[in-house]
Length: 214
Image 1 (cartoon, rainbow, N blue to C red):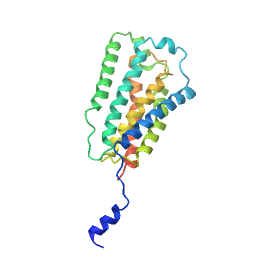
Image 2 (tube, rainbow, N blue to C red):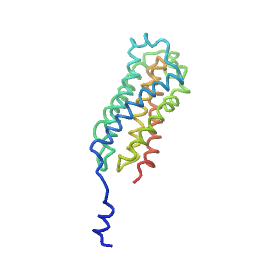
Image 3 (cartoon, one colour):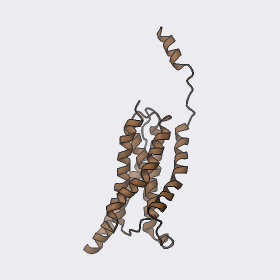
Image 4 (cartoon, helix red, strand yellow):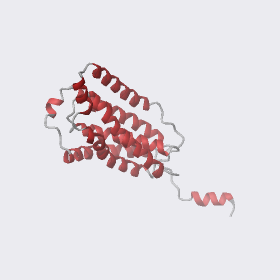
């Protein structure tokens, strides 16, 4: 069989993937998965009883704003990484800058606290379970995301694409978890929230390396 005939045979019946198919599927996963993640948090941990009062506190919105910025940055990067040879782009800087700003604010607040208040601000009462709880509620979204993207995405850097999916899932999971978390310390958020998202990102990198393998 000649080379031209072989290529023709292999290409027979092949259809182009619709433009923006991976991005559209990613949006669908987020749109459906986020409400389910909130329900998972409500069933597993419960929504904080003072949610109405918490809405008036700046820290509550920091708990939402930081992971939201990380999720947006990761989503934009992931959308690019699903195409072969396309770099992550500059969007990741948004997430990095937001986390850096959080650490700076936490450090400034930390310096003005007494020793006892510092311990409370950092450890709170749920530090042992916070990061793993964030990971637990985020992993179903991550697995769903990678599974649905598997047939459409063709990243040349699968581990990086998986890590971006992990950051997106972790950021969304953290937003949902914040509806439960009663911790009032900025240092707590800067350490344990970030660690939880980092865990999901690490799992995403490991899964992406396998699931997006060419």
